[in-house]
Length: 346
Image 1 (cartoon, one colour):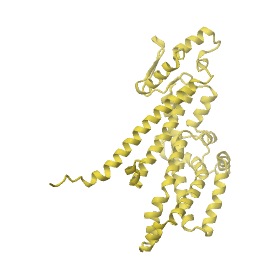
Image 2 (tube, helix red, strand yellow):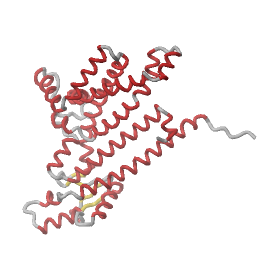
Image 3 (cartoon, helix red, strand yellow):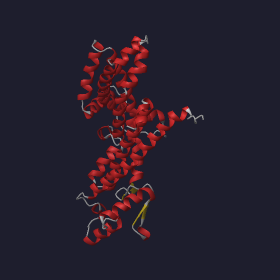
Image 4 (cartoon, helix red, strand yellow):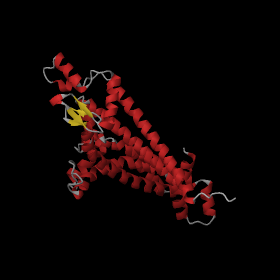
């Protein structure tokens, strides 16, 4: 009796879908654990958020009323349950005519800003994402291209020049590069603006024009590390036995480099890029401060200074979410570039 044949597409697709489902489930579990731990850490801090909303003079009775309104007079596990439930179903603070509703996903409410944490973070994220993604594209392209050229020409003056240039980029602090860029390109040459943010929806050209300098500053400090890392990875792969076998089969050097060298040598670079981009999307604190752009980094600094713990907690969770999401994307890209990853489930 002839057995049932499995379609060829299912052999290739189903392991990948199963791998993606497992990684997605693990991501949700990790996010839940981080939300609980982050809440407990901030709950254990000695700072009392009710003091910022108590007003002056802050009597003991008024402070107790504020704590009851915010829900801080309840047990920690009750507050944790309300916080987690608010993320999926929203939350209401207080009662009667004074009640404040925070729609889902509710990560808290900033009474200092009179706005939900989700709205505050969402508004500032557009600035941070514009800075981070643009700079990441520049440093990835420049760093990878320079690193590959240095690896192919290793031992030559091109390789030595590339490695020497990375020392400057790795050693230079971001704030120093930013100040030098502002002085040379902003004040001295007067070719680029040195601050302010124009929304993408308002004017695409002005949006990019005002972000060129922040992009270059971040890309300069990060591209050096990517150049060195890419050079080492690609050079190591080009010395493997399967590369010599490919050359022995008569493949041209370009085919060997693109088909075998880059595909294997850039896998660790993708991991590094995903982590760096996820961290940077959580707030480019120094760059935003230097160029007077109100992103998540500037919001975090202001919230810490004003003891606005709901906003600090929200940014911490949002940053963790971005890093975990970046790792998930990296894992999925890994599975596409190396199907053995999905097959083994590692």
